[in-house]
Length: 249
Length: 114
Image (cartoon, helix red, strand yellow):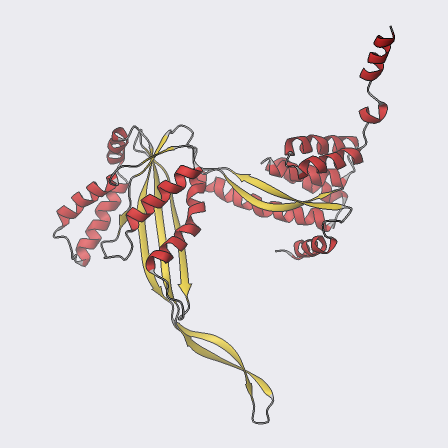
């Protein structure tokens, strides 16, 4: 906040609601969506590519379900709900080519990453899926959810008593355990009529907890998705920035 | 005959109603803005600014209404005119700064849309 904005905010607060010369009013500034989706009637969350590592969270399934819920209440688009995310079948096909399920070598994981990237960029694949689901706007992409360890020495200031009993400020470092999770989502928005990529965007969020906090991966995942959702929705729905302005008499 | 005269008297606008001052338009604009009727508020603030082009309050309020309605270029213009008339006014400056923050967000979005 700039200095004069702070001064004005203070003046507004001091003036109070009874101030004769000014009135504070709530405003909602409209923000256009990034993508014009007016030509679509349906939207399909096709599923997501995730790492082959075992995860505590069913990333693709949870994300698809969460986005479907959000889209139902925030857009006028009909949200398609297939029994199984349609991307899943294609990814299983990729895995079959790679090898035995369960444990994968580094090369196999890299191969899966390349193959799945190729799939995400394949207009023919999306066009075919679009035909199957009556040409919706298709949402897919890649998700990564990882635990983070930021434990280490942090600068710290302490007040201690000297031999004479006087307080003194001591600067030092203290080891602090800080663990958490990061979520990165590369969303792709595809035109189900043509298979063409309409928009691609990466969102990244991270949350760290102190040593005394014990938070489950699933809770952290929802916390991170909660932060990420407005940005995701801003791609396809207009958003509003809420604030206040001052009207002058 | 008397009925006709009475009717014509009733239909003749009173000078005080027909010729409002900028201050009255601003006051009414604020009243409707507080009820969320921004279209009407905008009309009133525009009228006030036409009646008194040196009225910084009318221009500030017009800018707020334009911002609320998503007309960012015109809002900026109105804020800048208001600030030019009353340089250093902390309220107008605060509105202008907050407008800039919102406008920056909007521009970032529209850039990524291209």
